[in-house]
Length: 106
Length: 121
Image 1 (cartoon, each protein chain N blue to C red):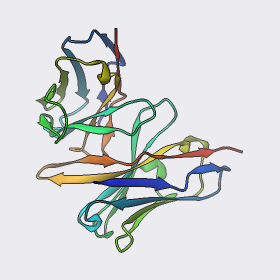
Image 2 (image 1 turned 120 degrees about the vertical axis):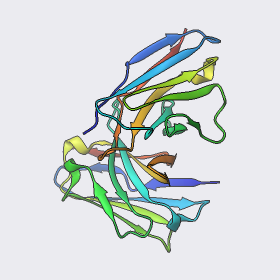
Image 3 (image 1 turned 90 degrees about the vertical axis):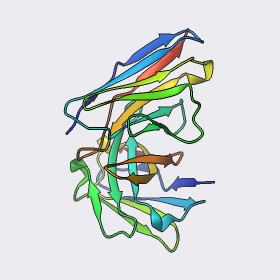
Protein backbone atom coordinates (compact mmCIF):
# COMPACT_ATOMS: atom_id res chain seq x y z
CA UNK A 1 0.00 0.00 0.00
CA UNK A 2 1.08 3.59 -0.61
CA UNK A 3 2.01 5.17 2.71
CA UNK A 4 1.34 8.90 3.08
CA UNK A 5 3.39 10.66 5.76
CA UNK A 6 2.30 13.95 7.34
CA UNK A 7 3.72 15.95 10.24
CA UNK A 8 1.42 15.37 13.23
CA UNK A 9 0.89 18.97 14.33
CA UNK A 10 1.57 22.62 13.59
CA UNK A 11 0.90 25.84 15.50
CA UNK A 12 0.69 29.19 13.74
CA UNK A 13 -0.63 32.68 14.42
CA UNK A 14 -3.61 34.15 12.56
CA UNK A 15 -2.51 36.03 9.46
CA UNK A 16 0.55 33.86 8.89
CA UNK A 17 1.20 31.51 6.00
CA UNK A 18 1.29 27.79 6.77
CA UNK A 19 2.37 24.86 4.64
CA UNK A 20 1.30 21.31 5.41
CA UNK A 21 3.29 18.58 3.74
CA UNK A 22 2.43 15.06 2.60
CA UNK A 23 5.02 12.63 1.31
CA UNK A 24 4.05 9.45 -0.54
CA UNK A 25 6.07 6.22 -0.37
CA UNK A 26 5.72 5.89 -4.15
CA UNK A 27 4.59 8.11 -6.97
CA UNK A 28 0.91 9.06 -7.03
CA UNK A 29 1.27 11.43 -10.00
CA UNK A 30 -1.33 14.16 -9.35
CA UNK A 31 -3.83 11.82 -7.72
CA UNK A 32 -3.52 13.58 -4.35
CA UNK A 33 -6.35 15.31 -2.53
CA UNK A 34 -6.69 17.30 0.69
CA UNK A 35 -9.48 17.31 3.26
CA UNK A 36 -10.23 19.42 6.32
CA UNK A 37 -11.84 17.85 9.36
CA UNK A 38 -13.02 19.95 12.29
CA UNK A 39 -13.71 18.26 15.65
CA UNK A 40 -16.93 16.27 15.62
CA UNK A 41 -17.49 16.85 11.91
CA UNK A 42 -17.03 14.89 8.71
CA UNK A 43 -14.12 15.59 6.37
CA UNK A 44 -14.56 18.31 3.77
CA UNK A 45 -12.81 18.34 0.40
CA UNK A 46 -10.46 21.30 -0.11
CA UNK A 47 -8.15 20.40 -2.99
CA UNK A 48 -8.37 17.67 -5.63
CA UNK A 49 -5.85 16.58 -8.21
CA UNK A 50 -3.01 18.10 -6.16
CA UNK A 51 -3.78 21.70 -7.07
CA UNK A 52 -7.44 22.18 -7.97
CA UNK A 53 -9.51 24.23 -5.53
CA UNK A 54 -12.90 22.70 -4.77
CA UNK A 55 -15.85 24.95 -5.46
CA UNK A 56 -16.79 27.11 -2.48
CA UNK A 57 -13.42 26.72 -0.73
CA UNK A 58 -11.71 30.05 0.02
CA UNK A 59 -8.83 31.01 -2.25
CA UNK A 60 -6.63 31.18 0.85
CA UNK A 61 -6.20 27.43 0.36
CA UNK A 62 -3.93 26.12 -2.38
CA UNK A 63 -2.19 22.88 -3.22
CA UNK A 64 0.92 21.92 -5.12
CA UNK A 65 3.13 18.98 -5.93
CA UNK A 66 3.32 15.85 -8.03
CA UNK A 67 4.92 12.44 -7.75
CA UNK A 68 5.76 11.93 -4.08
CA UNK A 69 5.85 15.38 -2.47
CA UNK A 70 2.79 17.54 -1.94
CA UNK A 71 1.92 20.69 -0.04
CA UNK A 72 -1.25 22.32 1.19
CA UNK A 73 -0.82 26.04 1.81
CA UNK A 74 -3.12 28.33 3.77
CA UNK A 75 -2.37 32.03 3.36
CA UNK A 76 -3.39 33.85 5.42
CA UNK A 77 -4.47 31.51 8.20
CA UNK A 78 -7.69 32.43 10.00
CA UNK A 79 -8.97 31.29 13.40
CA UNK A 80 -11.64 29.16 11.71
CA UNK A 81 -8.90 27.05 10.06
CA UNK A 82 -8.26 25.18 13.31
CA UNK A 83 -8.73 21.58 12.19
CA UNK A 84 -6.97 18.39 11.16
CA UNK A 85 -5.90 18.20 7.53
CA UNK A 86 -5.62 14.87 5.72
CA UNK A 87 -4.05 14.03 2.39
CA UNK A 88 -5.41 11.10 0.37
CA UNK A 89 -4.18 9.40 -2.78
CA UNK A 90 -6.31 7.67 -5.39
CA UNK A 91 -3.60 6.88 -7.95
CA UNK A 92 -2.61 3.50 -6.51
CA UNK A 93 -4.79 0.74 -5.10
CA UNK A 94 -5.90 0.67 -2.37
CA UNK A 95 -6.63 4.35 -1.76
CA UNK A 96 -4.88 5.58 1.36
CA UNK A 97 -4.90 8.57 3.70
CA UNK A 98 -2.16 10.33 5.56
CA UNK A 99 -2.26 10.31 9.35
CA UNK A 100 -3.40 13.92 9.45
CA UNK A 101 -1.83 17.21 10.53
CA UNK A 102 -3.53 19.00 13.41
CA UNK A 103 -3.38 22.74 12.89
CA UNK A 104 -3.63 24.88 16.01
CA UNK A 105 -3.72 28.65 16.18
CA UNK A 106 -1.60 30.49 18.71
CA UNK B 1 -27.99 20.54 -1.94
CA UNK B 2 -26.11 17.26 -1.73
CA UNK B 3 -26.93 15.33 1.41
CA UNK B 4 -25.68 11.99 2.69
CA UNK B 5 -27.12 10.66 5.95
CA UNK B 6 -25.88 7.46 7.52
CA UNK B 7 -27.83 5.30 9.96
CA UNK B 8 -27.72 1.89 11.57
CA UNK B 9 -24.74 2.23 13.88
CA UNK B 10 -24.65 1.31 17.55
CA UNK B 11 -23.25 -1.24 20.00
CA UNK B 12 -22.78 -4.80 18.75
CA UNK B 13 -21.05 -7.84 20.21
CA UNK B 14 -17.96 -9.35 18.58
CA UNK B 15 -18.86 -11.91 15.94
CA UNK B 16 -22.30 -10.41 15.31
CA UNK B 17 -23.58 -8.47 12.29
CA UNK B 18 -24.74 -4.94 11.59
CA UNK B 19 -26.05 -3.20 8.48
CA UNK B 20 -25.40 0.47 7.81
CA UNK B 21 -27.44 2.61 5.44
CA UNK B 22 -26.72 5.92 3.74
CA UNK B 23 -29.61 7.91 2.30
CA UNK B 24 -28.57 10.22 -0.53
CA UNK B 25 -30.38 13.27 -1.87
CA UNK B 26 -29.72 16.40 -3.88
CA UNK B 27 -27.97 14.65 -6.77
CA UNK B 28 -28.51 11.87 -9.31
CA UNK B 29 -27.40 8.94 -7.15
CA UNK B 30 -27.05 6.41 -9.98
CA UNK B 31 -24.49 8.62 -11.73
CA UNK B 32 -21.89 8.24 -8.98
CA UNK B 33 -19.63 5.60 -7.50
CA UNK B 34 -19.95 5.55 -3.70
CA UNK B 35 -17.76 4.48 -0.82
CA UNK B 36 -17.55 3.82 2.90
CA UNK B 37 -14.65 5.29 4.87
CA UNK B 38 -14.06 4.65 8.57
CA UNK B 39 -12.28 6.48 11.38
CA UNK B 40 -11.42 4.76 14.64
CA UNK B 41 -11.68 6.96 17.74
CA UNK B 42 -8.95 9.61 17.75
CA UNK B 43 -7.40 7.99 14.68
CA UNK B 44 -7.04 8.66 10.97
CA UNK B 45 -9.24 7.83 8.03
CA UNK B 46 -9.33 4.42 6.31
CA UNK B 47 -11.05 3.52 3.07
CA UNK B 48 -13.35 0.51 3.56
CA UNK B 49 -15.15 -0.25 0.31
CA UNK B 50 -16.29 1.22 -3.01
CA UNK B 51 -19.18 0.34 -5.31
CA UNK B 52 -19.59 1.44 -8.91
CA UNK B 53 -22.49 3.65 -10.00
CA UNK B 54 -24.52 0.67 -11.22
CA UNK B 55 -23.49 -1.79 -8.52
CA UNK B 56 -21.68 -4.05 -10.95
CA UNK B 57 -18.26 -3.64 -9.36
CA UNK B 58 -17.19 -3.65 -5.73
CA UNK B 59 -13.82 -3.19 -4.04
CA UNK B 60 -12.75 -3.78 -0.43
CA UNK B 61 -9.79 -3.22 1.83
CA UNK B 62 -8.08 -6.50 2.69
CA UNK B 63 -9.09 -6.48 6.37
CA UNK B 64 -12.82 -6.56 5.55
CA UNK B 65 -12.84 -8.82 2.49
CA UNK B 66 -15.19 -11.73 3.08
CA UNK B 67 -16.80 -10.02 6.10
CA UNK B 68 -18.26 -6.76 4.73
CA UNK B 69 -20.52 -6.32 1.71
CA UNK B 70 -21.19 -2.98 0.04
CA UNK B 71 -24.37 -2.65 -2.00
CA UNK B 72 -26.76 -0.01 -3.29
CA UNK B 73 -30.39 0.46 -4.26
CA UNK B 74 -30.49 3.14 -6.95
CA UNK B 75 -34.28 3.24 -6.91
CA UNK B 76 -34.11 4.30 -3.25
CA UNK B 77 -30.90 6.37 -3.58
CA UNK B 78 -29.46 4.38 -0.71
CA UNK B 79 -26.04 2.87 -0.06
CA UNK B 80 -25.50 -0.03 2.33
CA UNK B 81 -22.72 -1.74 4.23
CA UNK B 82 -23.44 -5.20 5.60
CA UNK B 83 -20.87 -5.99 8.27
CA UNK B 84 -20.56 -9.59 9.44
CA UNK B 85 -18.20 -11.30 11.89
CA UNK B 86 -17.48 -7.97 13.52
CA UNK B 87 -14.27 -7.51 15.49
CA UNK B 88 -13.26 -5.01 18.14
CA UNK B 89 -10.91 -3.40 15.62
CA UNK B 90 -13.93 -2.52 13.43
CA UNK B 91 -14.99 0.00 16.07
CA UNK B 92 -15.10 3.33 14.27
CA UNK B 93 -17.24 6.06 12.82
CA UNK B 94 -18.33 5.00 9.35
CA UNK B 95 -18.76 7.70 6.72
CA UNK B 96 -20.60 7.39 3.45
CA UNK B 97 -18.81 9.35 0.71
CA UNK B 98 -19.61 10.29 -2.86
CA UNK B 99 -16.91 9.73 -5.44
CA UNK B 100 -16.26 12.07 -8.35
CA UNK B 101 -14.17 10.61 -11.13
CA UNK B 102 -12.15 12.64 -13.63
CA UNK B 103 -9.57 11.45 -16.14
CA UNK B 104 -6.72 9.69 -14.28
CA UNK B 105 -8.04 9.97 -10.72
CA UNK B 106 -11.06 10.18 -8.43
CA UNK B 107 -11.77 11.78 -5.05
CA UNK B 108 -14.37 11.94 -2.26
CA UNK B 109 -16.26 15.18 -2.82
CA UNK B 110 -19.08 14.86 -0.29
CA UNK B 111 -19.23 13.05 3.03
CA UNK B 112 -22.07 12.22 5.39
CA UNK B 113 -21.86 13.08 9.12
CA UNK B 114 -21.09 9.45 9.94
CA UNK B 115 -22.52 6.74 12.17
CA UNK B 116 -20.62 5.21 15.08
CA UNK B 117 -20.16 1.46 15.34
CA UNK B 118 -18.87 0.04 18.63
CA UNK B 119 -17.93 -3.63 18.74
CA UNK B 120 -17.72 -4.76 22.33
CA UNK B 121 -19.01 -7.45 24.65
